[in-house]
Length: 428
Ligand code: GUN
Ligand code: ZN
Image (cartoon, rainbow, N blue to C red; front, side, top):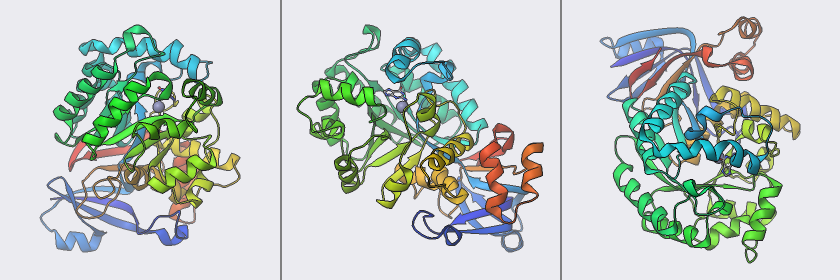
């Protein structure tokens, strides 16, 4: 039994549904008990010390004990090309992304980047990632191997593409189906790893490939499916050209059985009313990637309107279209985008999105993204005064959310004091 002492916040309700001040309880001298990889208990220091006198105690002082961050959409193979200058989506893919992704057939390259990727994300306090790999099965093996070594709960899949990409980066409808199926059987449910069926996006898959992946999903309805939708206007126009019979972008996926409750739809910035209503109806998840949407110049996600409609929304870096590995920086960008749309997000909403909200989008909120007893012990301990700039602002705070907000806006990996995964200390 481990006892971690620090400040704790516990969400009792969704801060987009109830007044934010009613959504969470804060314990100034809190404690979380870990046992056998799970959260065993949460309460005050005094209560838990009394209850578990034999526990090994780590006192984090004024630091915040938080669920580890959940990054609901990333491309680990783009680690080495993050922050590449000057292109919009399609040019950015062709100029930077595809040449780098072409290298992942080499298992040594894939393994090296996967190691770097997980070192960087865990240094930023992220304990769950959902990644696109490349078309190469080797890239999936490298991703899951590096995650399992660290005891992480991660999700990912082979990116499928059979057109509009370099020859070296194309599979076929049959090989996409066969390779995805083999990888799913190899990895799904091993340790804490989950396979995700991954057609990159409509422009890089033929109808035959989308159909094959729709079939695979129908055969494995318990796995998630991830893709991109309505990120940039040029992309949307291209999809309309490629699929002239489809009603809209979403309809392309729907025709091939790729819209359902387990769909993770990345970006979703320029959705039509019909698409929004239909996504809500099937209760698919939308994944907001704010640093990416600004970096590639894609647009301003309508968090307020979509939350009013009760959409299921996760938050993500979209590394390396996104310009950071950090969910703190991602929360800051989500705040700024929401400001530009006239509806500021409360720190409680931002923190919820980066933990429980993303977990809920992945349909894993019974396992991760929370400090509730019985869930998995993935914990990030945050120093709320990690730099001079943050500390001098935080001392003026009048409540816990005002204390946290400077770290959201100005924090980086220096704020991450410790990371626990599956009940074990991963880094400190
Ligand atoms: N759309 C299709 N592929 C990608 C990608 O790798 N990154 C982003 N941001 N959008 C995409
Ligand atoms: Zn993406």
